[in-house]
Structures are given as structure tokens and as C-alpha cells.
Amino acid sequence: MKTIIAANWKMHKNQEEAKNTAKQIKAELKTIPNNCEVIIFPPFTAITATKAGLGSPSQIDLGAQNFYPAPSGAFTGEISIDMIKDAGASWVLIGHSERRHIFGEEAPLIAKKTIFALEQNMHVLLCIGETEPEREQGALKKILQYQLETALTAVPEEAFKKLVIAYEPVWAIGTGKVASSEDIIEAHSMTRDILYSTLGKISKNIRILYGGSVKPENAASILLLDNVNGLLVGGASLEAKNFIPIIQAGISEY
Ligand code: PGA
Image 1 (cartoon, rainbow, N blue to C red):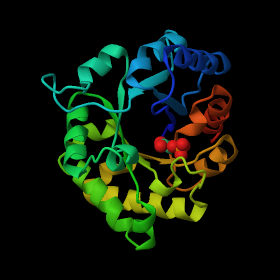
Image 2 (tube, rainbow, N blue to C red; image 1 turned 90 degrees about the vertical axis):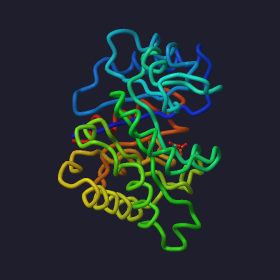
Image 3 (cartoon, rainbow, N blue to C red; image 1 turned 120 degrees about the vertical axis):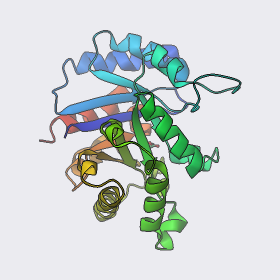
Image 4 (cartoon, helix red, strand yellow; image 1 turned 90 degrees about the horizontal axis):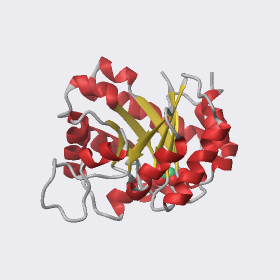
């Protein structure tokens, strides 16, 4: 299984900043060994600039942080999968906690987006994770199970190879409060078990990334934990000088 190191730039960077960061990453990492995949999720307006900064050909893939699950139409403010492909991206992020909690995206929409994107042949990074009160109430397993089952039960089997899960405890995102090794091992093993009970054997090839306050200092040790197949990085992916050592941790994991 290839390790995935993914950058979520959220609502940061204009075109010039995106292009410069991409150029710096490319300059430092001329070739990425094939045990590791790197994906950058810039804001929509900076996808093409990021692509230009990476140059062509590039081993680094691009993704969009959101889209609307319809081919086209009267959906003011939304972006379609075809537009994302046209901009040069092949991945989409779905179910990020900021979409769930700030924008009120709920399970039925997340399920619709997951099926739609996979049908359109996109790679999907589906995020799941519990809030602090849910964890305190002992609801971790219930939440992960609900989020995974609602998003995945209608997905056709052949689409699973384009699916990656990111476990991101909401209380660890952007807070500097990284989950402990025990918390990560517990949640990733639950996720693995739920994937198996929902999807069967085929789920064994689905990678599970960890996200939430990943930094150059903790990346390597998190990558060594059981069932951690990569990292989704927010704040520490914005500057090349922080993101490069995280990619290097992914490359040297084996
Ligand atoms: P963070 O964000 O690394 O800044 O905590 C992670 C994410 O939101 O994907």
C-alpha cells in the first residue's frame, strides 16, 4: 500500500502564493519514490496555478476541496466534477469536518457526493471523525460507524479502489491538540473493522489517513502506528518548509 501525504490548503493562498509553494515543493522533491503518493487540495481558484508551479509531468496530484453532485445546472456558487477535471484535479475531498459543522453538510448529501464522484471516476478522500462531546460520551464507534455506513453502503464494489478514508478527530483539527498514539490506534482499528463489516474483504486495500494537527515533528511517529496509511495535513502544509519534511517522513516510512 502506498503511503499518502495530502495537503489541505483550505481557504488560503492566491494564485501566486500557490504557484510559489508548489514550485518550492517540486524543487526540493525532484522524484518521489513510488511507495508514496502526494496530493494537494488548493482552493478552486488556485488549482491551475498550483499545477503550473508543479510543472509537467508531475508526480504530485491535485484535488478539489468541494463540488456539487450534479453534471451542471442552476446551482449558483457551486462547482462541478467536470470543471474540477478541466482545472487539472483528479481527487475530491468529501465530508471534511468544516463542511459538516460550519456548512451543515449531513450524511445524505455526503453519501450522494461520494457515489457521484466515484461514478465520475474521481479519487475520493472521505473524512470522518468525532467531536469532543461525542468522544466524551463514549460515542466514538457509533459516530464512525454512522459516517462510514451512510456514505458507503450504496457505492459499487469496483469503485473502492478510488476511495481513501481520513480519520480526523474534530477536536484535533487546527487546535495543535494532536490525538495520542492510543487514540489514533483505537480509532483506526475501529475504522478498519467497520470498513470490513460494511464492505467485506475488498476493504482491506482501502487506505486510512490520520489528520489533525500533524506537524513535521510528529509525522514520522504517527505514520508508524498500526492502520495509519498516510496523513492529511492542514496548517503545516501551507509552507513548503513544513510540508516537505512531512512528505519525506512518508517516503522513508518503509
Ligand atoms: P490541521 O488540519 O492539520 O490544521 O489540524 C487538518 C485538516 O483539517 O484536514
